[in-house]
Every structure is written in structure tokens, then in C-alpha cells.
Amino acid sequence: MTSDNLAWNTNTNHISRYEVSVSDWITYMVATTFHDHNRTIRDDNYEPFNLGDSIEKIKLKLPELEISCWSNYVIKAFLRKDHDMIVQQVYNHCEHSYIELYVSKVAWDSIKKYKLLDLPIVGITYDQALEYVEYKQTISNACNLYIKESKNKYRYECFLPTPTQFDSFQTLSDSFYSCPRFNFKNSLCLDCPSSKSWKNHPIGQKVGVEPIYINQYFPNYYGIYNFKGNVAEMTSEKGIAKGGSCQHYASEAYPGRSQEYIKPEVWLGFRVWYKVYNRE
Image (cartoon, rainbow, N blue to C red; front, top):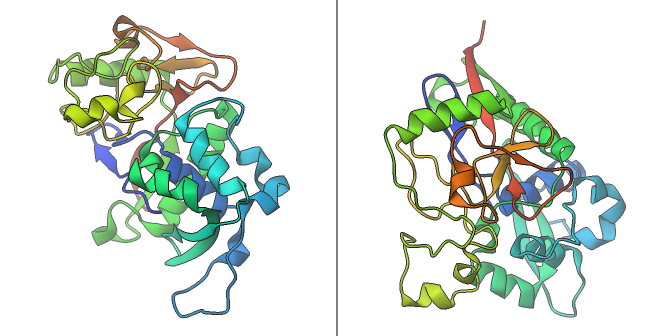
């Protein structure tokens, strides 16, 4: 499992192209908890492990699993123990190594077929989101993930935007891209890159009800996906999210509107924002 969640330059800030995905979250949980399980390609003396055996180690990083959604289906697949298990790899970009995990084969068949790792992570708390942002800042500065041709010239500050920052960019991007169709409450998904089969697809059937893929629909002028809708995005102000969601009406996604929350929700996620500075 790897991620291509690269930041997109908007001149003032760098904003992740995609919402934080299930794949991103699993990589984060594993890479920050199981350092001693890193394996190089040349190392054959290694035994894969099951996350279900390490609940105590990862419980503070797990989403609220009582929420019923496809995102949690994936997380639970890595926690359960079935008779028929297969091995999947979580890649550590900094160390060019990977960690091998067991996962239920029958669940993995569905995960792979329906690309469930490309769903946004939901069911997490504000504090968990902040910890992920700190992790992204650490690995961004350690690994130069985004400007590889200028190694060690830049340092990154990762953050959740203020509500004002979110509104300001949304207004700016709307001035260039006015298409109003996205994953909102009761949406008919009129502009999904779809076919007849999409309407019978287990994810396609969740449009207007549950989050769908982080790269679904069309990007805005700056190449950012789902800046409106899909999941409402946490801001630096705890309890305030922006951008609407699959369970909010389209009118609630526009600048100046906010979604309040007090706990993890199936409609609530986030993306990482960046500032880039020259190293002194």
C-alpha cells in the first residue's frame, strides 16, 4: 500500500491534492508503532504479523470502529483473524523498507476489487488528526517527499487550516471553477466518471449517503479533489469543519458555511495543508 497524496501549490499555501485516505491512515498507524518490524528487500528473516495481536499498541490511533462504513470495513479486515489470511505490505517511504501484515483474504479480495483503500479515513477525532499532521510534518522534513530535486533546501510546516483560510481558498478556487456537482446529501452523482455499472457498484450506491473515493469527480482549478463535499474537513478550530459532506446539502458546502461536530462522524475527515520555507 502506498500513497500519492502530494501537495499542490496555490502560491500562498500548499494543500494536499486528496483527503487523507484509508491507505494513508493504515500506513501512519503501522509506521509509527512498529519501527522494529521494518524490513529491507534483502532481509528474508522476517515473519508478517497481525494487527489484531497489537490492539493495545494501536488503540489510540484506531478510528471509532462502531461507525458503520466501508472505511471501517477495511480497518477491521486488518484486525480480524480468519482461517485464510494473506500478506500485504505497508511501505516506509523514508527508509525504503516495508512492513508485512496479515489480512483476511476474503476481505482483501473486496478491498482490492472495489479500491477501498482509496476511501477517505473517517471516524477519527480532532486530536488524532493533529497527531497525523505532526507525523506528516516529521516525515516531510526527514524525507523531502515533495521537492525531491531540491533535497534539504526546504522545510515544511504542516497544519490544519483556520476556518478563514479554508473559506479564502474556497472562494478563490470557486472563481475559477464553478461546477457545483460533488458528493453531497441526496446527490445523484451527475458528473461521476461513471458507466451503467457504477450505479450498481457498492461505492457508487453510497453517493449522497457515505464518502466515496478521494479521487472521484473532477479536481478544481488547482487540481484539488473533493474540496467540497465527500467528507467535511476539520479545521484548526476544534469542533468546526468546512466544505460540506456526503451528509450535508450542497448549500452547506459553500464559503461561509460550517459544520459543527463533537465526536467522530462518518462524514468527517481532513486533509493536510503545508507551508514551505527555505532552509537557513
